[in-house]
Figure 1 (cartoon, rainbow, N blue to C red):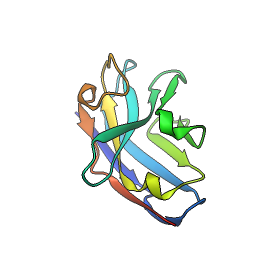
Figure 2: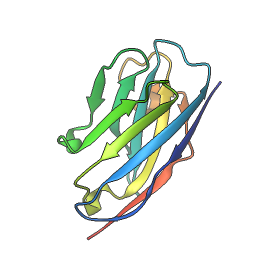
Figure 3: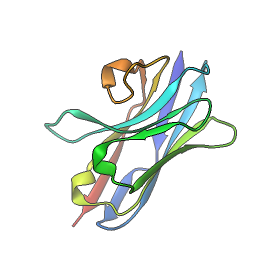
Length: 124
């Protein structure tokens, strides 16, 4: 089992930044991919970013456009999503997720474990 707990959400003005963290516990193996997704009311859950548990391979959703950065800390127990130049369109609940061996990193159904989510609200 893998447990994921997100933190760092909140209210920020357009153009501002937020740093989301995902505390990871449980059994994580080298093939795992850690992802961030987001879901706005009435919309599908969208892929934001992902990073391998081993190495530094990353992937980002098209809308990110260089504004967000995903990383792991040195102890590999936290996955961080640094979000800059936020816009009101970034308002959503952001979820951390873990996939043992995903074929498609941007597909929610490939991820077996999910956190409870953290709300990000960007005001104009």
